[in-house]
Picture 1 (cartoon, one colour):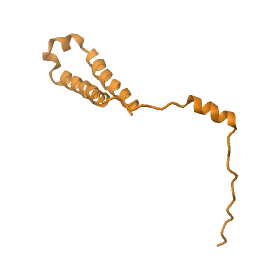
Picture 2 (cartoon, one colour):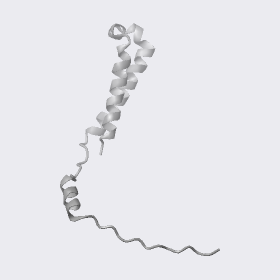
Picture 3 (cartoon, rainbow, N blue to C red):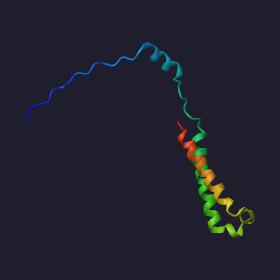
Amino acid sequence: MPKSKVRKKSVYTPPEDALRARGAQAKVLQPSPRWYAPLMVALMLIGLLWIVVYYVAGDRIPFMVSLSAWNFAIGFGAMVAGLVMSMRWR
């Protein structure tokens, strides 16, 4: 079988003004503080535990009975807050 020819591509050099504009916009991202990851995991676990406790013993805990369906919003809200934090973690 014949070998295909290799084409040489010219090297792309962006215009000077594009390089200066990009350099001005770039900023160095700092790592997250040490407390960020434990808080993120804690929020996800607290949300999960809130929903589990509501299912298992929600009818015996007075304030959970008064919240009724809002317990799901509290539990899922805590989990979503932890997940949003995980997207910003460095």
